[in-house]
Length: 276
Image 1 (cartoon, rainbow, N blue to C red):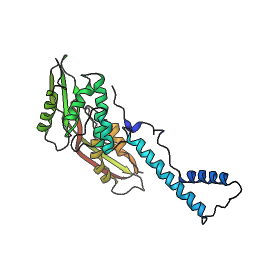
Image 2: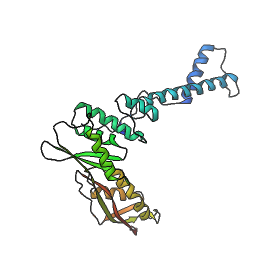
Image 3: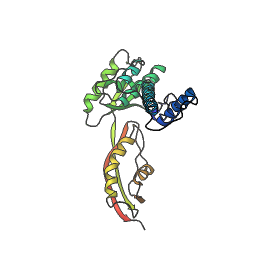
Image 4: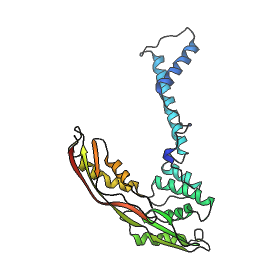
C-alpha cells in the first residue's frame, strides 16, 4: 500500500480564495439595489462607503477564519493541537518533541497498518512510534517465514539506544509479531562521494561552484531514503542550477541496498570558468 504524498493533493474546494474588492463590490451592488434611486454616490468620503468598506473587511476576516477552521480538519493542513486531535481519530498520540510532519506520516502509516497486520506499514509505524530518534525504518529481504527490519537513526542519535527502543516497542503485546521471527538491525550509512566541474554562464557569480558544493550535502540528505539509489543523472540535475552552462561529473552515483541510506561523503565541485 503506497502512502499518499499529502503535498501533491489539489487545493481543497472548501478553502475559498479571499478577495476584498469582490466582497466590497457585492455589498455595494446590494446596497444600491436596496436604496433604489435614492442613493448613487460612491465617493471615498461618503460615510456609507466607509461603512461598506468596514463590512467588507469584517466579512473578509470571517471568511479567512472559516478557511482556517476548514484547514484545521484536514490532515494535510492541520497543525499543533488541531493535528493532535486529528491524530486521536487514528488512536495516534504525538511523541515528545515530534514534529507535525512526522506525526502526519505516522497517522498515514497507522491507517495502512490497520488494513493488514504484518504489512510493511505496520512495521514502519511501530518503529517510528518507538522514538523520535528513529528517522525511518523498512523491511529488508529475509528468509521465508521471517522478517528483517532496518532502523535508520536520526543524525547524531545514539544507534544502540535507538535500536533498543525499537526492540522494546516490538516486544509489546499489541506490536509483537505472532509466529514470525523478527530481526532488527541498524541501517547502514552509504557515503556518496561527488566530484564535478561546473562551467558558468557569463552572468553567473564567481563563487557559484562554492555555492553548489555548500548546498549539495543538504540536498543529498533530503533525497535519501532507505534503499533509494542516487543515480548520476540526479547529481547532474542538482548541479545544473541557474547560472550553470555545463556540468562534467567525474564521479558516479551509487546503488543503495534496502538496508542502506545515502549520506554526503567527500564533495568537491570545481569551477571550470565561463563556458565558451
